[in-house]
Length: 317
Image 1 (spheres, rainbow, N blue to C red):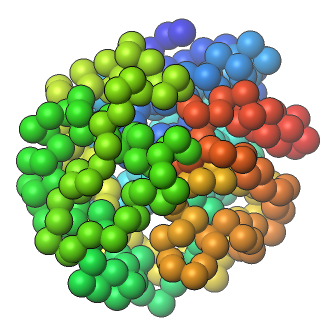
Image 2: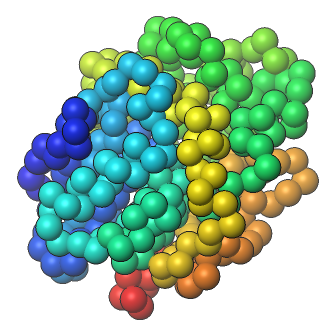
């Protein structure tokens, strides 16, 4: 595997690249790295594709601007396009997980000529609604803790997470995994609670995240902190204005959805299964794969099943 630096204006992006052939670009979520795609990089590079997995701006060895305005979906989509153009092998197939899923969905909308197909993991495409999601969350979780609301105040979550980065990551990764009690991430807490209150630090950690894997993430967040990653959550109201031009648009490229059966994301809106119809706003939807017993970190918890679903998708294009 090689690492290259891709420039997008003042932003420098660290990108892992492997293989040769049609281009696949992988976009991670919170709190992860391009490293979270290690199983997919190996699989698809061996299968005749050129795979590029970037550290999203704010993470790893990519640039970390301080201002919240730098983390809108429009800016992040432009980073994905910069990677595609640097590779020179477009149009690209996009894989995105967690926040990476909205990034790749919106890259497909903002830059349709650059994107051949798109697969979202854990977060289905949802068109722009009548209010920003964070405002909906304030209503749904009024008087209760919800992590995205907690993340809004600058410096608060940073201080909590950076006190013990290894412990914080173990607790967050476990709470959202299929091995945790179901929907532990959404367990009711008072609004004034902190993120890590009540979360378990498992010893040992489940086998899908080895000590050497965890060390990669710990080192990256010790070096770069959490402000950039958390600013993505704070940019949601800015997105709402910037996405107005996309209102009513569907994903026109071939698309697919993959997620874990026990992912708490599907229960973010009480009484609604957010995974029930993930292709509702995708005009060339090729189907969804819900992997039994698996939580949020689908491509790491269940790499073989995820790779099989992604393989079926890309081979069918």
